[in-house]
Image (cartoon, rainbow, N blue to C red):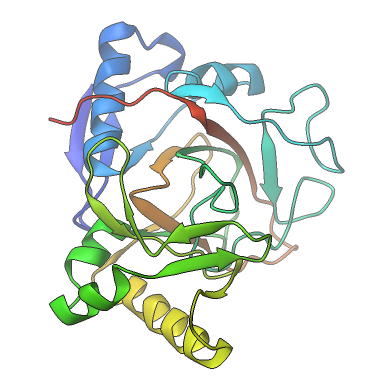
Length: 255
């Protein structure tokens, strides 16, 4: 197994690995790499839905989802996103967010497996939330450190969220589901969220993943955020997503 840093300055690419055969030593390496780098890109996998669930369990216990159109019968652990409604959920997450931020205890880890790739469109963007925080001006950090944001369902999170394992601060904001910043007017909240969105997207701060069939991407949602890009229903793209529960996550030890 070879681990190579991605050019974006966060995340790593992993080669020479078959997730179906990950032994305890490899599992510890994967956990440590995710905790340190925030994002794992693993190409050339061949996973059935059951094998994806098993591979995700290397990082902890899984969340489950209701059965809906386009989802896999008997596999509540898999949330299928797609370009066509008959294949899964469409028009999902086209804004900067971390999965499960609407929960009181946010979803710590997401795992995507590419079932069908599109010829055009449908890339996923990632940005480093810890670097986003560290690259803020000190006076802005001071302002943001005392702020809390409220999701539309009432769940509140600090704008500066410390990682539960490392304590490293991150600029944590869901641009699609956040109703506003507590203690601020709607206008000020909107202006602040727009500023965060621009900061997430600043030049050199993002990694663009162009999906190939068999790709696996694993993200620490408390370290990185992601954003879907448009894709035409004329293209066929399917991603199977599994997520790890906050009360069941197994972190590694960062190098």
